[in-house]
Image (cartoon, rainbow, N blue to C red; front, side, top):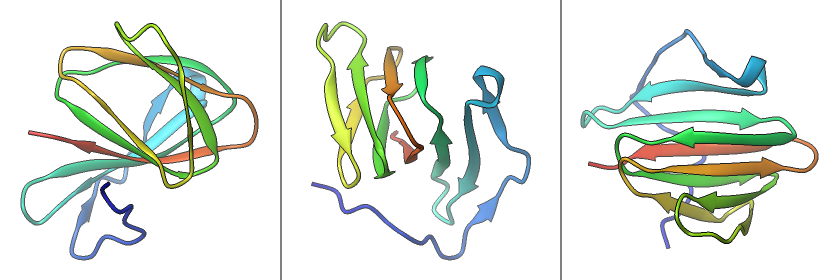
Length: 109
């Protein structure tokens, strides 16, 4: 299992937020020295569907959610410290019942 990072050193930050679903999902992009890209964000209570271009790994930093990856048919619960992957050219439904769900999204190449 990949360990969740709590700090990223030597990165560049895109200051304009990525805002989705009327502000219920907000993230900021960080650019890593090796050319990698991640987003750090939060999700308010609700149900949201995202499409993917590249494969992604979502790490839950705080809070909890349920996730159904397109084609999987079954939702899986994820709490702080857990992660899930989504294939390229796919998507996922993420549901938060209460509080905030904070995450790190890594774009895998």
